[in-house]
Amino acid sequence: MYNKVWERRSFKYVKKFYSVNAVVHYICNKELVGYKQIQGQLNSLFSSVPNAKVIIERVTCNQKGSDKDWDVSVRWRLQGPHEGIGIFGQPCGKPIEIFGINQLKIVNGQILEEWLRSIKANLFGFRWRK
Image 1 (cartoon, rainbow, N blue to C red):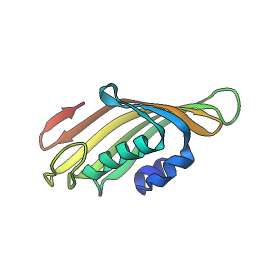
Image 2 (image 1 turned 135 degrees about the horizontal axis):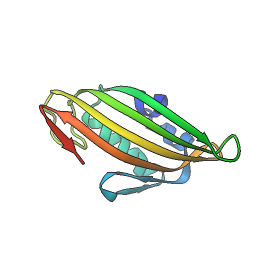
Image 3 (image 1 turned 90 degrees about the vertical axis):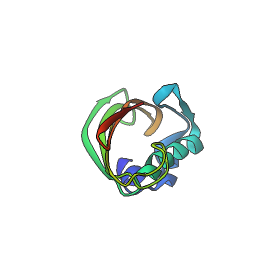
Image 4 (image 1 turned 90 degrees about the horizontal axis):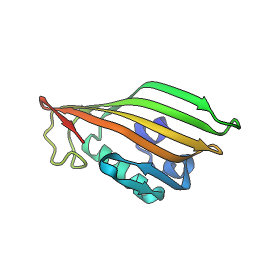
C-alpha cells in the first residue's frame, strides 16, 4: 500500500487497499470517511512535497484471527523540498522532513480503520507540529 499509494502517488489504489466505509482518524481530531476524503487528504499532503522520498522506517504486524485480519503500525518519513501548495501552505522551496506513525486495523484484507498518531515536520529551521 505505501509503495503504490504513497511512493507512486497513485491515489486511485485507495479503493483497493481501504474498505468502502474506511475511517481515518487524522490529526486535529479530523475524521476522514470513505475513498474521496482519504484520497483528498493524501493529495493535500503530497501536494506540499510532490517530489518527496517516502521512507518506511518500521512496520510491526500482529495477526488477529484469520490470515486477512491484522493490526499494523507503520513509522514513516517523507523527505524533499517544500515545492507545492498543500497542507503546509505556500511553498518555500526549502527541504522539509515529515515524520508520522500510522496504525491500521485490517479486516478481510482491507484497511477498515486507521489512526495517524503523530505528524511532525521540520521545515526551514523550526519544528511544525499539528
